[in-house]
Length: 376
Image (cartoon, rainbow, N blue to C red; front, top):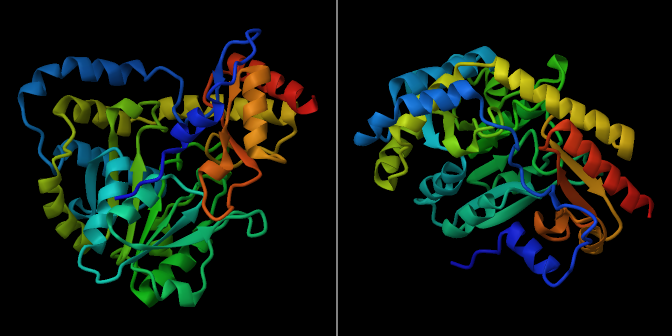
């Protein structure tokens, strides 16, 4: 298998040999990892259940964890899921990598489509599946919203969307997602939405829709060909819990569950216990959202950028993203991620991704430093 280097490895190579200014401490705005302490009630549940490390975890997940995830989907999206319509996973990275291999295994010449720019695990899954790739190019001209022609969709066995989107921060409405559900039924391909940023929004009126909601809206009540993935990492500032799920079409998930028993990626029981209390509680998520909202207010005041409706990313337009990244690191000791490292075929060129995942004071300081660099 010939995998591309990960974006962060490319970044290290790009910055190699550059001596940053010693007037500033390093500010890394590159990775989508919240820099806030995991809420104490989650940590306490983890500490309280460490004796359960003596038990092998079941691949299917604890019943109470499944119930907590189903409750989350019901409370957040008003979608009732049956037990067989959801599977707890070890975060979403592993499922995004191994589900395409499962889904495409019996296809003679499989084809996968995914949004471009993208989370690189999508491309890795395509390579591991020996699949042809159709890139769904997200550009300023299409408002960073996923579009493919019917001729392209007819070729697809699996399509992965990612809304709210990393890295562009774009969002698709329930009606726009519903059009994709109709196409998945019409052309009989599996449609997945990676919804890991669904809980990082800033106004109740702008809450991102789920593909599950869109499926119900067009009468696809059994979620035929439709799946979503979500994670607790961004929602609860707990990426180390590795708690995610895949939900939707029970027929697909029944066979995928058999596959998962061989994969060996069950989450340790104490992690599942801690994840259960996290999925069942929402006030801590409100607190994190307020921090991110303030960060984007600062970004608007300092940089003049319009805040997105969801995610914690700025997709900043620049002249030359590679030179911008190198000079910014050298002069201001700030790391950002070049957009071209996240896309293919020229998509992402002329952009950098900035992750606003620090507290208000740190965010203000680094944005002022960034503004000073831009004004040069």
